[in-house]
Amino acid sequence: MSQWTKLFIAAAAALILVVLVLVFMIFNFDSGDCHNRIHQEYRSPGNVYKALVFERQCGGNERYSTQVYLLKANDPFPTDAGNILILDGRASLVAPTLYWNLPNELWIYHHVSGNEYRLENSWHGNDGVNGEVRIQYKSKPQ
Image (cartoon, rainbow, N blue to C red; front, side):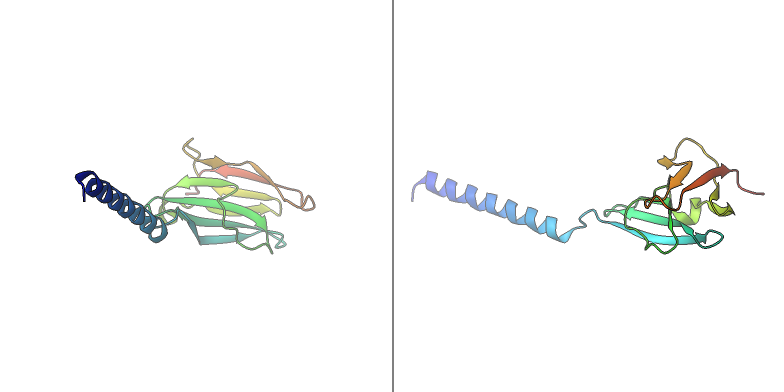
């Protein structure tokens, strides 16, 4: 067997090994899926809506965000990101307190700093029937 043939076989074997390692890593490490954990649920007067404060972690990293999702009271908890407010940090440390002032007005006790990833002032139900929910941000009560 010539020296070039041996070199070719060694290079092919190394390439196969690299491909196998990559395939193993893709199928055995976190795929980047996100996991949500409800921290607190707030139901509106008349039980038409619910606002969920939850903690979200994506991928295998240790970064957490605290988020608020507003939806109709009978809808299941979605798996996507919050549609009202997204903050950096664990829910146990940064979760806002929510209060339904009216059936269609939600107060969020959170000091708006400009560091929020998302900050909505209103929400419209996706069915077009339930109308609009107004959202007001207030300083935390003493």
